[in-house]
Length: 310
Image (spheres, one colour):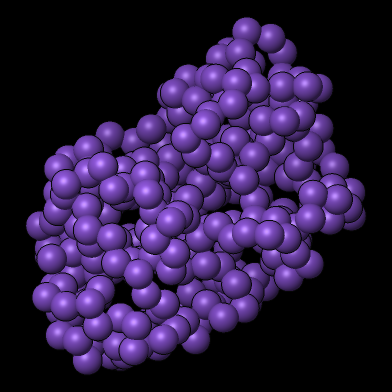
């Protein structure tokens, strides 16, 4: 049995979609079953309620589980949540735990300056010392975060970010999902850490050009200051803690403006890397401002959480 935690968040949702697409049996751990109704129609998915921070709620979720993909919210409690879950998984007899990480080792981050890379590094060390077999998946920036910019792309033909003209190598979460499903289905790769990026290092102007080709009109990238972006996020109701983390992340990227390309995981699992142009084409309706009633990719606001805001 395979268990995926955080199954209703952005990354978990797309990974679960890949399990269902490949008809691979999987168990989804969720805190609120009502948020997992989209999976109820699939006979290969078992939904179990539980809280990663409360071991007494995880008995049913971990029963008979051999491999786990561990995802949880990017928040101040992430280290405590995941380390406690690692202990519970080991006690339940789990053999192999795959950590969906954010350390981005060597991709352009110095973990000393960004809280979530520090958190992920601490969790990775804890997992490595736990006695469980482990594998780390370390994706870079998600292509899906650009779907958050669709409101201004649709209304102003512009998106606004404090990224100057640095080069970033974003990865499609659907590529990560294919790697994760192959790893969890077949096992192996214990003791390995895979940095993961997309196949290109792009400036924001080049990202705008890809979107322009899809929507059939010129889309511009407008560089803004961290202060301007901060106010925009505050106006959208984003929690201060999350904004502080995003400021740290942007500052670190500006200090490390050239992201390298890491396709080792794609090659190891036979996954063809998705270009940003291919991603934009697949999400053309979103960039055109057409609502998607099935799924919204948004930053967490005052009244909700997403598993991967960073």
